[in-house]
Image: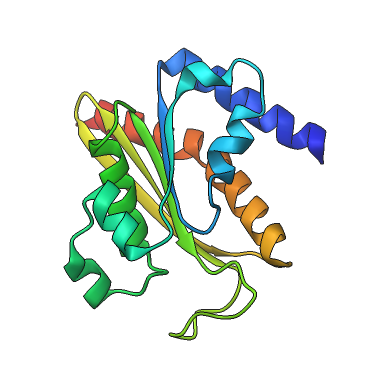
Length: 173
C-alpha cells in the first residue's frame, strides 16, 4: 500500500511540475494530512504554498473569508461549505490549486445526523480563463484516523483528474 501511495504522490508531483502548479489546502477533518502526505515525498515542497487547518467555523471565517450565512444555511459537512473553503484558500494564497474538505471522522456522528466517515471535498483551480471549482462527497470506512488518512489520499488522487477537466473546458471556451 505504501508503494502505491508513494507512486500516486510522485505522479502528482510530476504533474504539478509539468503544469507549473502550486497547491494550498484548507483542511478540517483531515487536520493537515493532505499537505503532510504530499510533503512526505522529497521535492514536493516547491509545489506547496500552504496548508491551513480550519476546524471551527470561526477559523473558517477568519482565514478563508467564509460568510456566516453559509453556516446558517448549510451543514458543517456540506459540499457548499467545502467549495467556499477551497475558493477562500485560493483567494488568500499564491496557489493555483486549492484542496479543501470538511467532514465527520468520528468517533460519533454529527449533531445533524451525518454519518461517521462522510467527507465533502472541493478542488479549486485558477487558470488563465478564470477559476473552476469541483466538489464531491465520499464515505470512508474505519476508525477516525483511517477515515482521515483515506480522505487525505483521496483528495490528492483527484487533483489531476479535475485539473485536466479545467484544461479541457478552457480549450473549449
